[in-house]
Length: 286
Image 1 (spheres, rainbow, N blue to C red):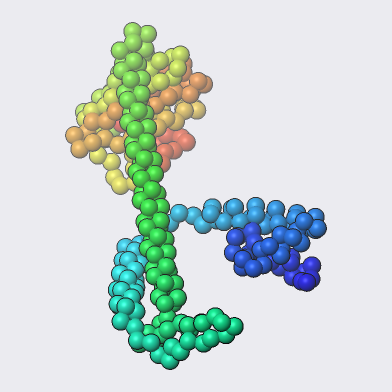
Image 2: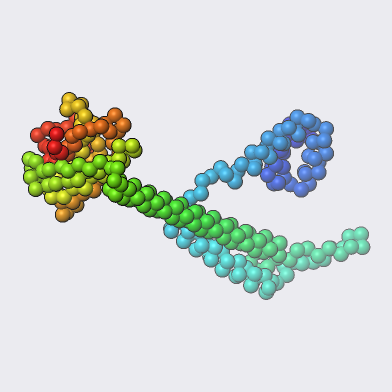
């Protein structure tokens, strides 16, 4: 009869279905008499059920995958050789023993030193390795498929956002209720000109500019909405293309929706909180 602590130590293996068959019945009989071990068994089973989620899905590298399948091919060839030798086995001292009218034939050994049981177990191990490798491969493929679906959804979302922005732009430019303002070039951009359309209800605004010189590295153009000359409101930054053209979509803050002056300056590409006055390139009439 085992002690209480010995039965307690058997619980983890029992929860994982890894307990020796001879011990299962004995432990189950004891569990019927111990509420303490019944409670601990529930905890061990709950822990075991989470093991499948303990490790993140990681894509194996090409080198790891190649080594895995190389080992499988190598072991398959070795097992084939063993089985071939088993078929040509030569009995070694296989003398029958008679006891109580029952004749017992000892297990025969092969020239390789492997008996039949070892051959069967080795073959079973090979099958298990192939099964695990296949499962790993399928998991990796499913992971790749999920990543592909996520990338596809992300692309579709970005496309939808672009289409929505374009739709808003067309609504602002085409709406008769939108405010339209012309901006003329100044300073370093005398040939530049721009057209600003914005909706006073939503604040959606679109600036279309052309004739803009390129800006130095780390710099960009920035739009300003001015209701109070002492406190202009900063807008987004933008850069022109190789032809000096640019389109900016922005939303005017509600506190600046009544702006009467609009200007464009050259600032750091991250944007500024107050304009650099000597870099004004575009400005609307006061």
